Length: 404
Image (cartoon, rainbow, N blue to C red):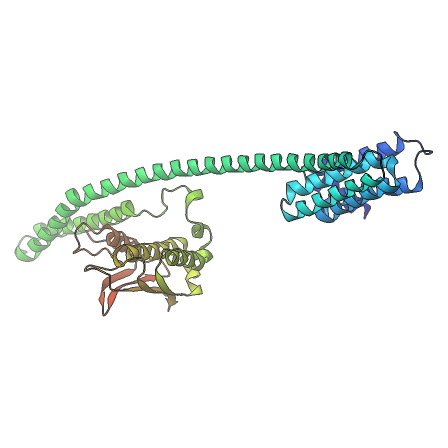
């Protein structure tokens, strides 16, 4: 028991030394500043009880503070010799409680300590005014000091959070700039190289079938050119897919979605997106299968982005009060996502950026690219009474597919 009490003195880095100093002060006060003749049995009892309560501060904060208040009342009545030690112990207990448990517990302990101090009003010649002043001092000093420390700690935490947010914003801005450069390169390759290469493959293929194979050397050259151009076109398509892929390849690891570190977080992440959309006004019936946590991190993030983009577009095109039905689950090793919403208030697609709308339809294009990069399929279109998005993603890796 003694070893455990000593361990409690040092357990908290902030208050362990304070408790140890309080115990040392109490022992010094009893053994060095007072003579045995001055100390009666009640003085020893109260003085040692204060030391024991100080040692127990790491166990129960409020009971210790109330116990110290009780010792103060007892000292005012029966042990005035150790009154200084008791007041120090009571103030220290209230201070630690206020720093660590600000709120109702601090209020209860402060009221108890003030009441204990007012016990002296009827036993001294100073009167009620002096007793009230002493009670205010013994309560207000530790409480105000604790409030200052808590405010300083809050300001420090806020500054640290802002610094982390600023660093995060800088990293995201740099990542966005890199992704913009990659997208620009992909567009240039697509427009300037891929079309010409595809045309070359087509023309060589036609030449192989149209020209007579009277010259074997010419046939071999055409076959070689066709094979090389086809291989180059395939490689270029993969390069374009990689350049357009915005999922985490260049983003600093500490800023990836939490589910990249823990794929089992996907059901909760999807549910969080649904709840935020409900708060925005959407009426969503959601069915989220727990087995979607079996997906790897990249596919998990793809699913999450599809749900986010789909619900955001429902709000945009069908209105914030639209009815939505969402189902995400695993079927025979394949993830199936189905998002359907009712008709919008105006003509046009509900919840989906369709190609025939005014503008390039980047939302749907981005979703198609994401799904294609993980080997899945996506379908968007009208259904009776509304619009529907369905996507199918294999649980394991599939060959990269991209359309030029």
